[in-house]
Amino acid sequence: MERLRIGLIGWGTVGSAVGELVRGGPLPVTLVSVAVRDRQRPDLPKGVEIGAPEAALEADVVVELAGGLDGPLAWARQALDRGMPYVTANKALLATHGKELAELAERRVAALLGSASVGGGTPMIETVAHLAATGDIEHIRGVVNATTTYILSAMGEGRTYDEALGEAQEAGYAEADPSFDVDGRDAAQKLAILASVAWGKWRPESDVTVEGIVGLDVEPGQNIRLVADATKDGMSVKPASLDRSDPMARAAGVENVLEITVADAGVFRVSGPGAGGRVTAGAVYADLARLVAGERPILFSQG
Ligand code: HSE
Image (cartoon, rainbow, N blue to C red; front, side):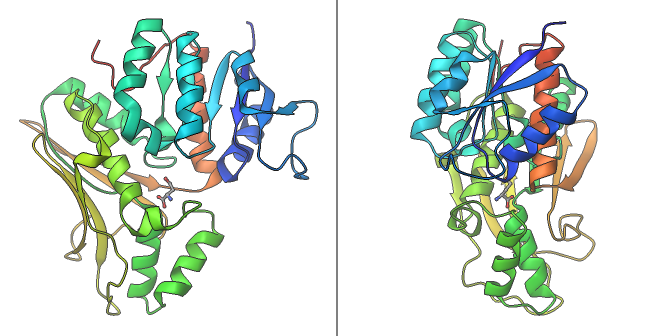
């Protein structure tokens, strides 16, 4: 079998963990280029072209883990326009330009994959897509931002906001700009992606009503979580004080929880580590496995 040649853009917490998996994992995949801002980093892989993001377009598949919007939009357009698969963890890109990119992928018969954009290593997009195929989804509700769960659960144990945010950053859970986490935008982007998959129609982040956690007082023992909630008609992200028996309240540290209610079927839940290099890299690797198997999935496709 021909090996799938990977052009990787981004060598941060997740990118370097993808590099490890590609090198040591069982799939017939090879890393051929890495684009990184700091080309002098000591941990860059040997025997691989270290270059500009555009070098990834010479591979068989682009894996974009750089973050940001303008660069990724341009690379995604170029890759998909050439019929190349585009794999990304970039929730901002998908929650802002997902419709355009899915339509382009359909026109060019290219794959668009983003398992790692929601849930870290927890298969949330896959679970929602599976359940949407079984019946009508009525409601989705989740704790989908690890940084705020980490902060709120640590504050509930008596630590200060700043101590808890510092720990979440040190562990590699927070976004490069943590205001995306604490202002609720990261959760809003993930919710928009999940809702788009649940109801078969792309919905942007701008449709989500958002309230963050900055300035919240958390009493020791109190269970506040940043809860994302969507129906066909509306989407919101806001902090909520939860009953101890609520499965959302049991999400602690880095854990994400998603609850999906399906008409005439009941409530389904999926939970697991929602951030971190190795687990998020696992979701990217699972997307690569689908490409190796010959699948050409398109996120948000209604076809
Ligand atoms: N900053 C994100 C979070 C990382 O805290 O959940 C995973 O998307």
